[in-house]
Image 1 (cartoon, rainbow, N blue to C red):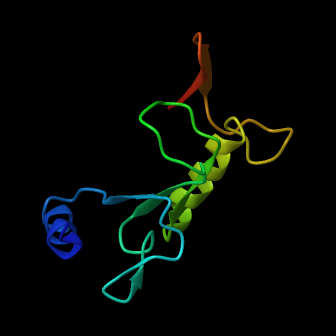
Image 2: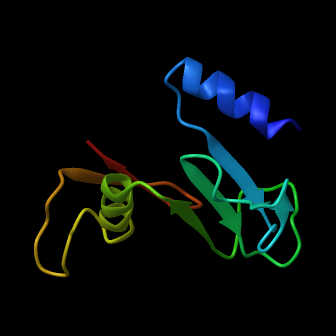
Length: 103
């Protein structure tokens, strides 16, 4: 995969570049750490990747302070602190997981 080409396409078209870093913690692409090149990097901490939706955990990285704050709020159910909701959000329960949507 040519990340440089994809980054150029994203920049030209004003798109976010989200790196799927899966289990690549510490890996490098052209001397750059994966998860640090695009707007976001998504990592999986599941010990063995399998083709299903259930995972044991992960994280997302960004170098954008505004998006980092928004991601922290989404992680905390729309709250900046444990007592104050800062973003309207709705929870929908499904049979296998809970989905959280925020405006």
